[in-house]
Every structure is written in structure tokens, then in C-alpha cells.
Length: 376
Image 1 (cartoon, one colour):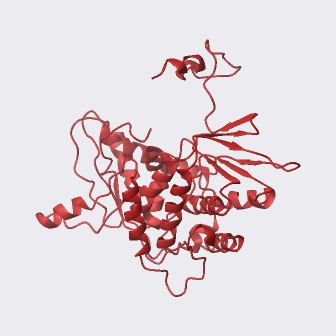
Image 2 (cartoon, one colour):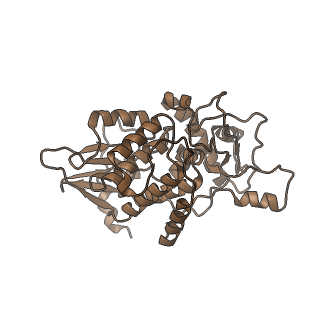
Image 3 (cartoon, rainbow, N blue to C red):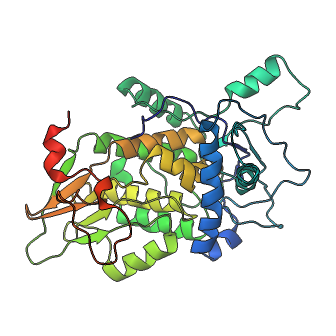
């Protein structure tokens, strides 16, 4: 659940945006990061995010080093990237925390995930400037957006500046503007390391939220006679794998429906590009593109596994808040031709639980199916 705690996660890290031009360095896009790269980043990041909940006293923020790490928007370290990301970990609890955990928090600070904010004043400066800087810290939004708040976000997005004069990608002017040519252009610029204008990204996500709010928790999918359904799972921000998959399976259409079965983002370094492409497919063919919510379409998971920091680096945290709202409105499963149930995590098993050969964990940690009726 996105609402398991009302305690703000506002002091995980501070990240300076990588670039205001919307361009990601080409070198960062040319070589996919390895699973080992992502695991090395994810583990200390998870510790840094969870440590504020351990113990009662908080340490001051780690002071940034004299030479902060230089990183691309994708999180790949580089000594040649022009815009740098400087990170300082904060909010690490000291009560009962081993020194090794504190060291991991420092590593997480270098990795760079979480809240974008304005340049932090010197520690010696206090008073109104310091108070203002504290107010600028991003805090996770734990509640749903009201219709009025979404309208205000739309008005704010509409007033944003357009792209730079050299931008040659697609422009979003509503769902009807998303055509096959639009998607071709979007894929092309993203492969070159160019992002959609922030204004267009905001409006696209807002329109996806409006579309998802009209759908039910359990959706229905029909396979056209003589055609097939493509189910895609766990893309996890791997844009190049996604492109290869589309070359093999084709693209969604009225004759070729798709179910994207959760875990679109996190871990991979191109989660923004992956989710914007999926949302474009959804806006183009809303009756033939279906999205399920996975365990990585959740606020806490996005903070730990990279999507939060990626959106903050490539756009801003306001857009991440809108992505979180879109994820909250995703269906949980789809029923294909009234016969096949497609969902991300599976259903709880029987009671008593059945141990499968080679099973190494206690299967009774899930709620047995027969007891669901007893839950209020």
C-alpha cells in the first residue's frame, strides 16, 4: 500500500537536476547497464531510505565531499559528463545502527536517488533562507489527487515553456495527437537520448490518469477472431529490450491487443522512456492496450529502486507525483475471454499450503485463498 505510513520520507537525498535541456548524454544511452550495476545501486539505496525509520534520533545530513560524484541521468558514473549530480544523504538514524549501515548510507548518497531541490545554502547560513530551503524539500505524496488538484496541475503544465528551438521530436496536444507517426518519432528521439518536453510529459500523464480512472479493478480483454494477445511482463526500465520485443511481437493495435503486466519501471536506467512509450500506446489505443499494476507501481518501491530519482533527474518531482497517481489507478488484473486471469503477483494458494520440490521459504506467509472472505 502507498499509505502504510504517514511519516514523510523527505530526507533521503538531495539531487541537483542533471540538465535543463532535456538531453541525456549519448554515452549513457549507448550501453545498457548490467544487472550487477543495478544491484550495486539498489541495495545501499534501500538502506538509506529505510534507515530514517530505525531509532528515534536523526543525524544531520552527510556533508558532500569536495569532489561530488559526476553522474548521468541514467545513473552511470562518468568523469566527462558536463552537468553533474551532487548528492548528500540525510536523515540517517543513529540509534542502534551499526557503523556498516551508516557507511552504506554514504554509498547510497553517492548513487543519487530521490528529491530534487534548489541549491542548498551554506551550513552557516540560518534564518529565513535556511527555512525556505527546508520547505523546498520534496516529500512523498501519500493521498489521492482530487479533481481540483488535477485541474490545477493541468493548468500549471499548460503554462510551462515549450521545448528549445532545436527540438525535433513529437508534440503532445491531447490523446488524438498520439498517432503511429507520433510514437515512431518518440521512440526515435528517446533512442538518441532526447526527452519529451516537460509540458508534454505532464499533459500525457494527466490524460493517462483520466483514462485509468474510468477503468475497473478487474478488466476484460477479448482476443479478435483468428488473432492473438501479447502479454508483456517486467520491463523494469530496460528500453532496448523493450524495443527488441516490439520488433519481434509487433506493436499494439486493434488486431493485436497487448497486456503490459506490471513492473514497467525501476532497476533499469530508462524507466522514464519505457513508461512514456507504454503511456503513448495506451493513449493511442485505449481499448486494445491494457495495463496491470505490479509491485513496482508503488511509491515506496519507486523510491528504493530508482524510478523516483530518475524522474527527479530527467524532469522533476512534480511529474513523479503524477506518475504515482497514475500507478494508484491501474487495474490489478485482466480476464481474457472470461477464461484466463492475467495478474502480476498471482493468487494466494490453498490451505494447508503445498510445499513444492526445492521450495526454500515458508509458503504460509501468504493469505490462503479460503480466508479472504473473512477479511473486512
